[in-house]
Amino acid sequence: MEASMLRALVRFVLVLVVVVAAAAFFFGYRWGGAHFGRTASEPAVRTERPVGTTGGQADQTRERARTAGAEIGEKVAVGTEKAAETIDEARLTAKVKSKMALDDTLDGSRVHVSTDNNVVTLTGTVINETQHTRALTLARETAGVAMVVDHLSTGIN
Image 1 (cartoon, one colour):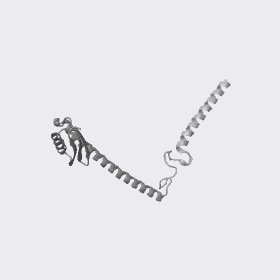
Image 2: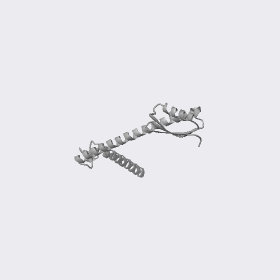
Image 3: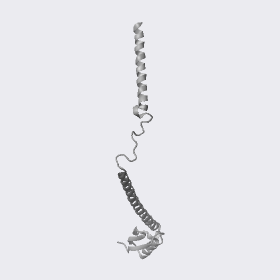
Image 4: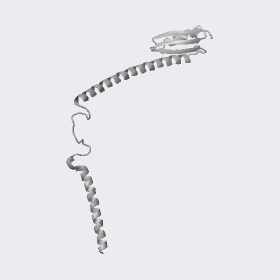
């Protein structure tokens, strides 16, 4: 019977040690020594300036960031403007090509259309003068076209 009482006492002490260790761990984590009342997410030292810089360096860093941001903004604006111009030119080219593809009088012609700053350039060959005139008319009547440059040749090559 003494052996069973001794085992029970050892178990009790062991459980008590585990409970005390767990409590010490959790309470130590929350109230660890000189850090009483502060959680682990709060900084140990409060500073008025960013870490690793002095007040002057922080101002310089901010100014450099502003300058870089402004430069990037300008480049994005220029890129967006160029992309919009390219899209407009492609739209005009597609409109003119579509009109020519759907026109029955231009059957058998080989007309290439290119656009630059709303100026449409027609190159290639048409079979006769009627097709030549019709190709120029279709291009000029397209909304958004400022001018048509004629590099079409007449006749079968």
